[in-house]
Length: 181
Image (cartoon, rainbow, N blue to C red; front, side):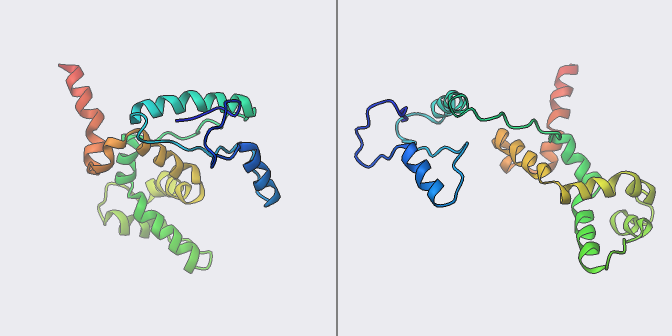
């Protein structure tokens, strides 16, 4: 499945990582902190492979002396989904993008945004949009970390990929109802 560089190489096609690193350097690419790996998927179960990779990644990081990645400043969960739906973040992102591209630096008034997104007697007022919703939606447009955290959430919760959004939102509500009984 894997081998350390110090182990004997029996595969005549295998190339050492030092050779690949030098090749990438000559090509103008920075191979620092990058690993090329080959995994034989028939050799072990997915769970075994995942466990081996967890151990190996820690060893590789130590060997390469790579700094730990920064902790995410933003968490993503079912409550975030609920907030995105309640605040109508995705349509608001569309409107913000439109105003940035076509409105020559002029912002759409918050009263108009409130009417477009929530109707005349909507749950969220122009003040809510001004104080909270607008900046929240804009942060999704301006900060890639939000999408990275969303992707991390889906990778960690792969079972949710076929679920409806409402099912994800109510997931914790159902488990907390069971705890009350």
